[in-house]
Amino acid sequence: MEIEEMQAVWSEISGQLEKQKKLTDKMIIMMTQEQYRRKWNKIAYPEILGTIICYGMAILIFVKLNTLETWYNIALGIACALILLILPVLSLRSISKMSGINFYENSYKDTLITYTKHKKQFQSLQKASYYLSFLLIFLILPVTSKIIGGKDLFVNMNYLWSLVIFIPFGILFFVFFARWVKKCYNRNIEQAENILKDLQE
Image (cartoon, rainbow, N blue to C red; front, top):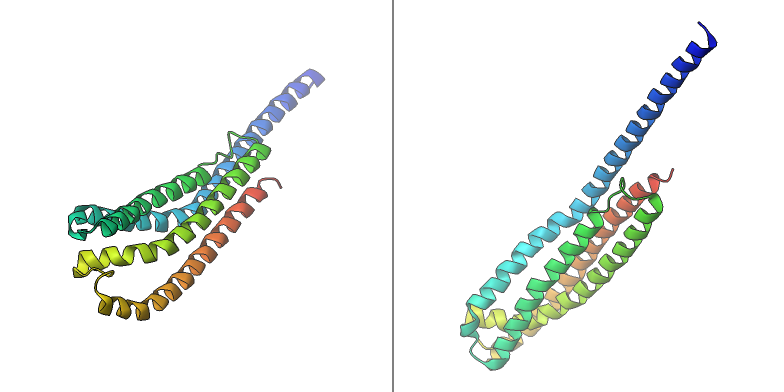
């Protein structure tokens, strides 16, 4: 075999190896992106379920708005319904941005910048959701009392005193549940971040 033929064969082999390497790199990035999305889906699915529940409650409030009768119960009902409608949408939008980061089309640096920006937004939103959900506990009590039991908390003092006993248990449950959710979310966020960092290696 002459030198020209050897060079041609070597050039062809090099080209095939380069194509194979690009294909392998692309497959690794696609698999990594799929693993990353799976981590965010573990956050998205409970949020979707929560959204369905929130929308159901908001619809119930709007349907039964005339049973609230007094202006203050109606105002509380509308405030609760708006919180129940807006918070889930913001949360799902934020999760969609996080899981939709495209590793293949962007450079690692751009991906990391986008991830960091969206992560801060998501965590800020989660913090705001926590405080608004805590406030919602108190806002929704008079509304549900009137819709379900037909009793006005601000008028029926006997019923109000029975709630004073149950409110601390509700707050305690909320705090433990919120901490558990935050711990699960943080674990998935950390695992997703580790998957992203593995691309650099």
